[in-house]
Length: 497
Ligand SMILES: Cc1cc2nc3c(=O)[nH]c(=O)nc-3n(C[C@H](O)[C@H](O)[C@H](O)COP(=O)(O)OP(=O)(O)OC[C@H]3O[C@@H](n4cnc5c(N)ncnc54)[C@H](O)[C@@H]3O)c2cc1C
Image (cartoon, rainbow, N blue to C red; front, top):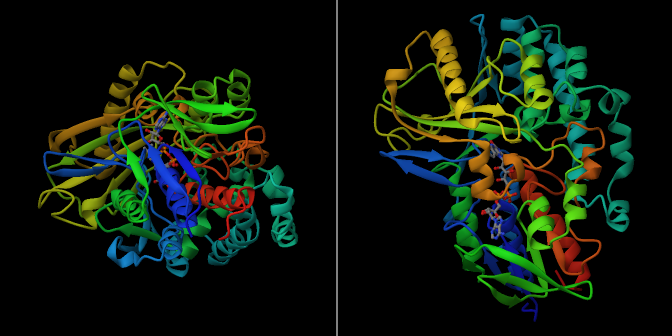
């Protein structure tokens, strides 16, 4: 049903796109204003010398969030988007020569950990069962409801959530909880890694984050046909189909407020009227630049920013049969690596290296035949003015040395093309403050409660979507932020859904 309402969405990141679709389905007239010439924000891509590269996210979980949008819009997803399950979530390489295939089949994965790392299969089973319980009972409340609207929170299944949480999930670190289940330091390191899924430090972040492995080993991981960019393309096409209007190369300069109510935005020095404004821009920048509210922007910064990344996009002139879609080459000193990232805000000489190769799923399509497109990422501290040019050189040297050591090869002559992304570029491209990948980190016990809500308490008609607000960063959570805000907005504007 058409309403008389007009909404302006600032930014076309994945949460901006999902918010636009949801509002268009409500019958709201939606216009998206995007500063870049393309949609997707971090979820974008580029081509170089016939190698295709997804620029940002590479891991795809919980496709049901996307399915739900198509269902809501009454469109057949098969006409827009295809994906398939991937049997190995990640292949882990350790410096001592041990290699672990993290099968998404929990039984096979337990067997692998038992054979290669002498873990008790029962402990692995218990750990994954607990991860599932935490996810289903606790995360389902945190991820699907606003924590800032008591009315909505009271409709959530809080009893089950409280019952599932143990003391250790709140008061012990993720590393401590993982250490209580497993005896081999390699297994602990493998499960500690899940803290990086929202840019956090496993030695500080609460044990509650042990719910993340559930996604991979109980629900599975997926590959979108055409690479991660297909998610952006599918949502963009769906938004167009629902009548959303897109304005590219249009940086929004200001959100116009009158008597505590949104009136519109300023873009290209022109005012555009709107009853609703949804900011998909980092909440820090929204307050600082679009609302000129220094106090609020400083308040946002009381929460520690998540880590950032350095990415090398390498066109490789060979195929590596020992590699999978997702690969990790672990640091020998994980604790030191995280101390460097979060405490010293420096890079570490032996970084954990992640390589994503989409040509494994679509050979000859994502890279020329016989070649591979390597997305090589290392965690980096959020930008506080470090010398990134020097860091890039150091990281490049150390990454190559590590890969040469473990893969017993010489990578350098195989690098046919190269592009690099650093935290400064991440901020330039997407306005993500300090180049953080996931907004704020989850290192504090209270992090989930302290993220900015999906609505403004002071300004009527102003809403927030994306990785820097509730429930947090990463594609699934960004999509959920759009869902939560649309439900609040529907109530605020008495829209029948
Ligand atoms: C290298 C990297 C690897 C990652 N890996 C993963 C992964 O494997 N899996 C995963 O789930 N997540 C991953 N993430 C995180 C994920 O990409 C983000 O959480 C998510 O894409 C953020 O989406 P968003 O909706 O918050 O918007 P963003 O992608 O941050 O986009 C915001 C948009 O707003 C626009 N904008 C900003 N200010 C203005 C303005 N004033 N006017 C107009 N437009 C404006 C920007 O140009 C941008 O297009 C990764 C991120 C990076 C960078």
